[in-house]
Image 1 (tube, rainbow, N blue to C red):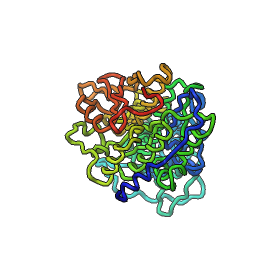
Image 2 (cartoon, rainbow, N blue to C red; image 1 turned 180 degrees about the horizontal axis):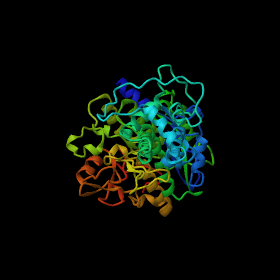
Image 3 (cartoon, rainbow, N blue to C red; image 1 turned 45 degrees about the vertical axis):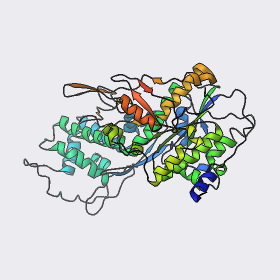
Image 4 (cartoon, helix red, strand yellow; image 1 turned 30 degrees about the vertical axis):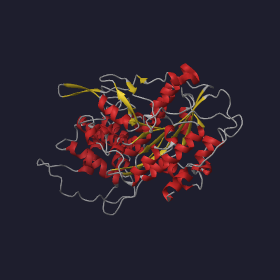
Length: 507
């Protein structure tokens, strides 16, 4: 036996004794996802599972201390705190983030006839006048140093505070910081040839600056990823009838932590995941096993990812609970499925090291406990007057037409979790004979492209039968949109081994 075969044999040598499973267990779903972002947290080995439902959803967000540090062009880092799902909405971001408070104050003073002239004067002093040629290359004179802030110093109020809200010291060069650069860039073009008393255009300039900053936040990839996770989880909870017979638990764990937990331990029995899935749920008398594990982890065909799937497949087998996750289009050799729906352009696992690992994985018995799904599904409509208007200010999320990457796409593992939960609610443990596959009521974005009416597919792209068959032939579960509707369908419940997905409900 070669050393590689020996290593693989050792990897699949885990044994477990199912001594404590209750006779009629509830249907328990475990979600693995990076839920807390940049919050302070304990090591993965010390984190506990949290049961979640509609009633305590926001309480779980607050308990985890969900936070995010994002870097924006021209402004630097902003820290956002989330205490409820609505804190991902621009109305709450506008209310809660200090920099928007400064923009609100500026707008208020420009709207008030008693403060408009002084506010406009200070804006003019900050941005300067622009000549008819539109040239703004002449450097402005450095402001005079001052130990006091004028009573109506809206300029300092907005331009000399960092994102945290504390006053920032002036530099001797006259620079007022990254926030000043951002506001200058956004507001100044709207002040060209505007007289001091032209209130409407002054206010419009501030509104444009506010909207541009909000777009930068909403479309920051790390913000989108965290929002997609929480909205995907909320979708699952809304579609599942949680009770004493159907429960959802979450484990706050990032992809990196997930892979490190599986790789760093000397044996799989030493991992935190083994503790949650096997020792505490199966080997402890009277405990309740998990029926399915949903991994919102952005897995692909990197060597570390495939090795992690090999190991988690063994744990899933020991727990008799399939592991279901979305898989990146990188698996097919493309960046995004929306830009390449022609199978002729796809390149599946090859002779690379990762490709060999994937082939080894799909040939193992444990592969029948692994399910990979794609594409993702639309978690919310874009914000705008015709889709989802804001309460706090006029805002259009897309200004030059919708961009695919600008939407919030959630992992379809949540969609499969919802289908399994609904199947259990209707059929109990006999559900394996009639698993539900259809989902309706997804957000559907309808917009105009010239004279053409466009329906954005609820699962990223419209897949033809040929494409679906190609995906299934390679062990994937396609989520298919019905054209011009709010409905999607899971084409087939299957494992990456191209067999029925194993679980306690198997027919």
